[in-house]
Length: 271
Ligand code: SAH
Image (cartoon, rainbow, N blue to C red; front, side, top):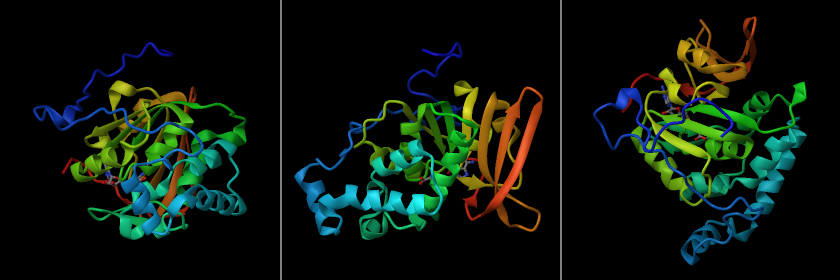
């Protein structure tokens, strides 16, 4: 173990879930991280993929997606490799499988959306800081907004440990289901209000939010390690959202506002 910080027990329970024993699950899920992971599914799974038009070509389709991302200017080799590896079509409803590798956001139920690949890659690149010379894996990462679990699966390729929190039980369960096929023992799914972060996993080398509020919760800043980076959508006074990068340094907080984005709202509490 690389850290002196106490790790959560199993199952993990968030403070906000006290008294709801089954509410929080800390799971190890998954499929082996081989290049062709997931293409050797059961007959039924294969049939579903083939009848959905994706067939056994999903690796080729993903490779094309990555080529498009590279053409759009995304260049972190680790991020591109991770996105070429994780089968996005396993995270969307069967009716949407044919759109899984298009650069579009897609509905994942309960009024939420999976971000488009370009935005996922952009945020992960910012987290990885390749521009500042980082070549290695991230340490512990906190993700707010598990959604369908796609970005969490990509993150699990890039970080030693990932804690991902979702406030909607339906999506938390769906993500667990989606991710069961993968072998990702370093990914821990939590049900709870991500606005309070997850103190037991702190400090985090990186924090990434997939939902935007009017302010960054103080808990996120507190739980970020010195030297760590947070990437999140943030709503300005005019209601428009922009990406914000927060670097926590020994001398304080440095905040940088970047391009406009469109994320679902960050909400408090669980449901
Ligand atoms: N990264 C996800 C994107 C999901 S959309 C994916 O790959 O699918 C953003 C998610 O943030 C939604 O599922 C929404 O329910 C969740 N969310 C919003 N506010 C939250 C909060 N306070 N804590 C945890 N999750 C939250």
